[in-house]
Image (tube, rainbow, N blue to C red):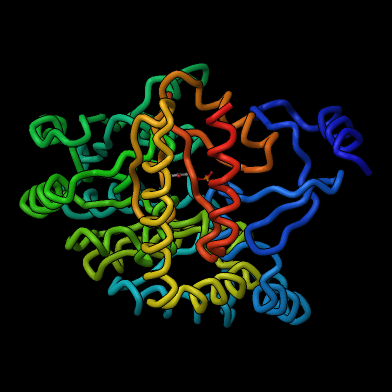
Amino acid sequence: MTNQDLMQAHNQYVMDTYGRFPIAISHGQGATLYDFDGKAYIDFASGIGVNSIGYGNEAWVQAITEQAMKLGHISNLYYSAPAAHLAETLCSRTGMDKVFFANSGAESNEGLIKLARKYSHDKYGKNRGTVVTLMQSFHGRTITTLAATGQDVFHNHFFPFTPGFRHALAGDMDSVKAACEQDTCAVLIELIQGEGGVLPLEKAFVQEIAAFCKERDLLLLIDEVQTGIGRTGTLFAFQQYDIAPDAVSFAKGIAGGLPLGGFLVSEKCGGTLTPGTHATTFGGNPIGAAAAAVVLDILTDEILAEVVDKGRYIQAKLLEMDSPHVAGVRGAGLMIGVTLRGIGHRELAEKLNHAGLLALTAGSDTLRFLPPLTIAYEEIDAGLAILQSVLQK
Ligand SMILES: *Cc1c(COP(=O)(O)O)cnc(C)c1O
């Protein structure tokens, strides 16, 4: 099978809803991928921040295989060991009280919204269900998480959207306060806005939101679907902000490539969602949970410190490139945005793909890197050399 065969078969039967790059990936090892024609690519994309421990990790393959031989699925009507162990690890490493397991980022964020509305309804009654989010945010593709997303381009076609969301300006506390009217139950934020352009929030701004939420008894909800699971150099990004969120969602990197998500809640909200109020068939699937346990085992403090070092190394090299196209570099850990000038982000990503480096775009002018957290320095150097040569052309 060649790339061309596969793309043709795929396009004939799969709906055309993605701006796919014309590359068909066959397999990978470490942070290097191979297409069906045998060409190698350095991976600075990791399946959009999902393949956190790279490809072909033996412990991950073994855990999945062993769990699949024992039990692949049982539903949440019964107890299973992998989810129980994973929940304990997540709570003990974050100081959070309890977890709910879901399957994707959008579904996990829907859980945050339901949590906040129920917490508020239980305590204050009706008409206090509005969730304030930030401009340039991205919270998912369901009708409700699209409504939560603070980008007008996403508020199209699918009317009517779920009511109960207001958007405030990132970095502007007056705007957040103005948006939090009497009907508000929560503020939902990403700490580094990923899809919006790799836009980090200032620590002081986040701490002001946290204090304001506490004062008004609004829940502070953090969407860590992209920033979580070691991406920014701590297990969760909120751990760098000296805040105590009420709930934190996660997904992308948690299971190293299998679909798993969920959200952690503080003690205050540990009993808010009760039997019958929230559920999902696949959530906490034994194979996904077993895979996630391996990911969390690998992400020790030492490895997380390396994520910080590698991120700094990449950022320094990017600035040294001194290309007229590189306008700026930002991000944390291995979540890095390169703002461009004189070249479109999609155009550059296509050229990089062609030259053997997989990279992502974000916002309107940003090239985004989310390499596997375990990427080797040789692979980083190889990827940066490709970027350098493409930028010089
Ligand atoms: C990717 C992403 C989502 C959506 O996750 P899906 O798994 O695609 O539903 C939500 N929030 C953030 C911050 C994301 O990066």
